[in-house]
Image 1 (cartoon, rainbow, N blue to C red):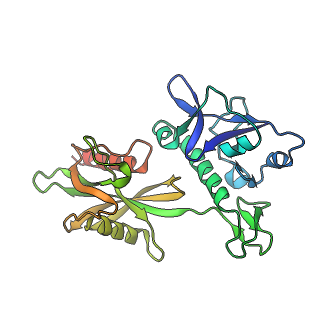
Image 2: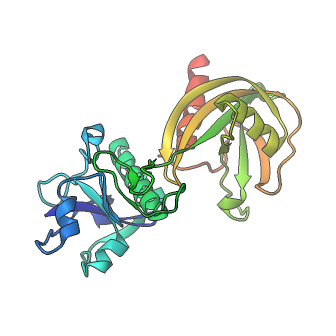
Image 3: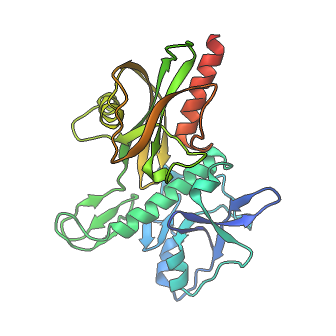
Length: 299
């Protein structure tokens, strides 16, 4: 019997607890006539389309240690909903698929990391079926979390895309109160009576450092120059498979000029009067809170 998370795109199969929805491990039988399931129980890195092991080697032995199945067994794998359907397996009627973005507001860090990794690995597996060098079909690597080309022997590892996200600060020119640069992105929908604002973020381009990416993204999106760039932390983010590197920077010069292709509005807001910001669980929320705490302790 295999205990596996069930994932459908960016939604996780959850069960209702007394206080919230929580992911759980669905028990999947490993039948003697299903060779693929027998192989899966050996915990190879990638064994079948729509199935990944959460701890295939010693490198990943800490994965899923805090996610418990309905039984006493540790959750050892993640499967796609299509994987279940192909094997005519069903989910409990009492369970529901909950979007990952909603879950992270209440999940502990360990849960977040396991779920994020599972989502990314299933997506990588589904999108990486043929060798980019010779176009031959890929097969599971015998000892690593990777795919191997049997023809040219090229090893394909999961790809992670580095991104930067920056909280830009300055003192309010009139009052001296600390302000944060926030922007309303088109992905938040049309501005309404309670629009959500976020931080400036973007992908790191080939040939630039993280600090250079910070300066470029801020200049491209709002036309400002910044200085005193300082690293604050990082977070894996499964949309689609990013590593978010967070920074704080100080406003240096320029007037806000919004890049209309991405943003509808941007401005500096007093930390004592912020608009709606990204939810708890996101690194944007965390670094905004860091700035608020810094300001509180500096008083």
